[in-house]
Length: 443
Ligand code: HSE
Image (tube, rainbow, N blue to C red; front, side):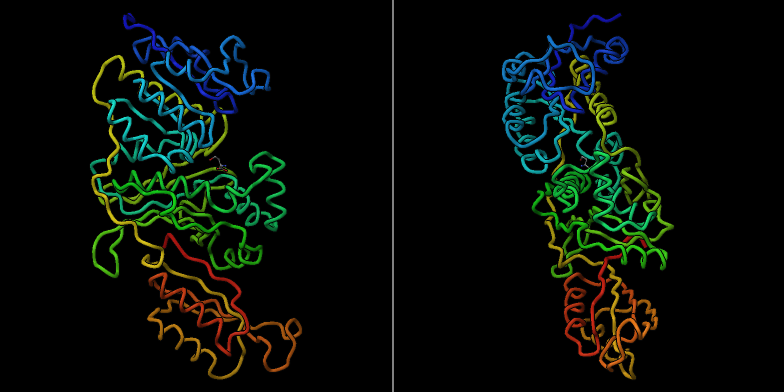
């Protein structure tokens, strides 16, 4: 029997996620009440435009443009409006008025997370955000709770569905980046302005959230090194395929030892990378997301599924709602953000990675030796070299035209050393062109 009073739920935003949250909340009200031990009463949905089209049927009388009054009368506020303002202001109002907050807003958390968590802690309210990374995929709670007793070393994430869709089309269908982007836009994966996705901003926000949780350290979004996919070519993707790799936009979060000081630190970076086709992340196709976690005791774990989509993301929001509502009913302190480790955030130059470098070189005696000496001068160890002869008709035969292509794989070295090696190769008289430089992960 349910004896607790109804809990008052406010939703901010009725876009593709908000409309589905409201619809599911109304549709499954009895079942959710059974799980929580109290009724969940949707008291209103704040929108900018009362007449905008919705992706789900929601009673018009629940819509309001007065977000502040709605927030002040709620026990739990669900923010699915996106953007930084007024979302930040609304969440601050909700928390200071004692409501628990659920948000799917990764940009807000990556930018204002620490101040919002501080307010939540101060007033004893909770801030839940499972939907902010990986849509429907449970990854926040596993990192915050299930793995809280372990030590996470590394996370490799495919956390942007649009770019995964584009790179997958380039890999599976031989599309150019422009062709694949056009299809992604047509299907609604990419926005009219695709910058946030293809330049890696969206993935960097998610990387900041994952790294903060995994390493108990507040990692701001501007501490994440970011490179997008706009430089990735069809030729690179095809060459990767020939050598047993696939190109993915990865969010890499690592706990490392600073090579300068010998002290522990953390790093978060987003960039295109080669991963072996045998790695579980290589099997993540289309617009799906996956987060591969390497932990000391648990070993390797992979969380996989739909990284976006209104109803899928609504599933994660409603999971948070049940947790937040249960806390109202049964009490307890809830979960606090853990930033106790407070490790230094290392710059990309301190990170160690492996590179695969493709060079067009002259085909004459001594060329390989000169190239090898560039690597050794920068203390970068070569792991493998593959040479193929270029069709002379393609590049002419004037003696200084490239005669061979070299694909050079390195062992791990610091980014600083690898970047300096590439710069020196570009200046070398025996190198006609540096065709491609990609980091290699997952080996
Ligand atoms: N635009 C994102 C993606 C979804 O393509 O994965 C929202 O984070």
